Image (cartoon, rainbow, N blue to C red; front, side):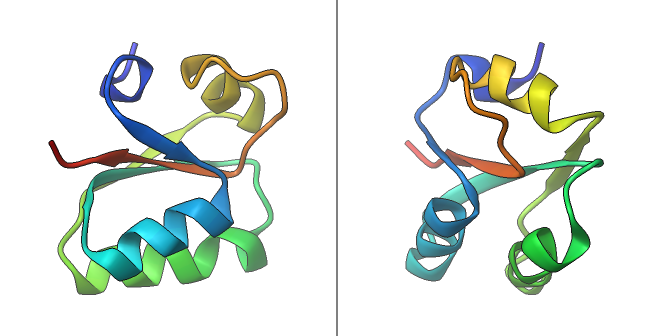
Length: 80
């Protein structure tokens, strides 16, 4: 799957934005089927910090990769 499966992570757009603002994000993951207005800010912030963005096909697939039951629009892998 993706590195998000096993590494330290935050799940959800609010947590992803918080981690990006702290400068501790290695990679962000964005579900392709999530609403743009929800994910756009995280994507822009990641791009401005040269943080790689990985697109996942669906919010359900991203949730599964993160081992959570609730669909999620974004998640982030945290630097060790």
